[in-house]
Image (cartoon, rainbow, N blue to C red):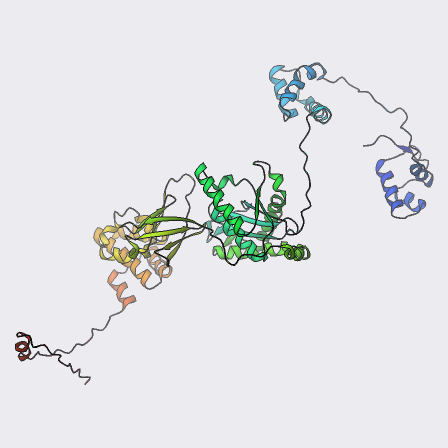
Amino acid sequence: MDFNFIWSPLLPGKRITQHQESLYMSKRQLGHSQETAAAKASISERSGRRIEKGDRQSIPGERHWRTRENPFDVIWEKELVPLLEKEAQLTGLTLWEYLEDEHAGQFPFSVLRTLQRRVKHGKATQGPDKAVIFRQSVPAGQQGLSDFSHPNTEITTQSAVFTHLLYQFRFAYSGWRYVQIILGGESYSALADGLQSALSLAGGSPIEHRTDSLSAAFINRAEEEKLTKAYDALCDHYSLRATRNNRGVSHENGAIECAHGSFKRRLDQALKLRGSCDFAAIKDYQAFLDKVTERLSKRCQSRFKDEQLALQALPGERFMDYSELSLKVTRSSTLEVKRIVYTVPSRMIGENVRVHVYHDRLAFFIGQPLTSTIPRVYLKAGQERGKCIDYRHIIHSLSAKPQAFRFLQFRDELLPTETYRKLWRHCDQQLQSRDACKWIVGVLRIAMDHDCEERLGDELLARVDSNKPLPSLKSLQERYLGKQPVPSIPARQQDLASYDRLLPGHWHRTEVVVSHA
């Protein structure tokens, strides 16, 4: 508080505060008369005139001395200043704990606030210079920024925790943004996919694309060099100049770091309004994110239209947003990508395939054509290896050898849901070993052939829960396959004379007449 006051004759014994003085001057600047401004500030017109003249009087008897001795005068210069000169980030609490250890009992906790004020004043008057943040005014079409972040709220899909990142692209000038779900961690494929989707939606590319150091996108020097080359090629494709902020200096990327906070706050509020953080599928969650993003971008539509006029034209096609591997499918109809074993359709056994590794899927090519696509999975915390098994890829082969199911290396992963795992445990207890394997494999075959995995599993588990016996495999097959009619093939006795003509080599065609009677 400012201790330079004006005595108010309107209110004897009351001093005019800094707030009253500021209020009076602000009203005068708005065009109010001295009388009106003084009334609003609760002072007299005479005091108002003195304020305008700059006639300020000090409070009589104003004190400029301490009323008590500073307990830290003895050790401040000797012990505390050298510590602060060595490490300026030390706090008053840390220094008090140091004094408590070195001078036990001399500096009680009640003097902590005095020490904190002394430290704050010392840093402000004698401490080192601090880093200055230089606010930027970026022209339209000049800069776009990308970054990844974690959502504040836990998201679930069908009641299962959904682990993911949010990629966000933002124009520095207009503030227009794009947000996309990213599976796994930061990677080149995630950055390339998100960036290209954002530029396509915006209708053009800026001159400069700024990111952080991308240190989370690689684990060794070789991967860093590979990512850098791929990213540079991506920027060349879109005529972007790639720039990065210094590692650990997040405010240099402030236009996107600030956007993370505003978006996640709006997302949290939208989820609270929705009343649930659970989504039926990832695409539903992405649609929800698009709606939140669209509302945020509405605020900057006029500036975004100006920005679009300054953007560069996009190339005719997207750039490669995947990494490529060349692998051979094993005789078990599997291959391994990033320490994850995947099953593939058994027709691909023995083939050399090219695998396009995206952040959310794997695409398989034999030669030029795309043969199949499967979702990509990631290792969980603490896992060294993982499996992604789709029973539909191998169930036809397994149906011919159902006893191979019992000791199959990926038996538990082959069962598609917890429902089928419960069915397997139950039938393994109720049936003979061979019959149990044959029954569960047969059920999986029916579930695939008739696209009834969920319905069939729920129906069978309901019988188990109600202590009813499981239906036999034969009854299930008759129910879904039905009794196929045996075609009638008419028998015809061959004329023996034709064999006589055949032996010496007299070949001729015999017309077969089929009777429809």
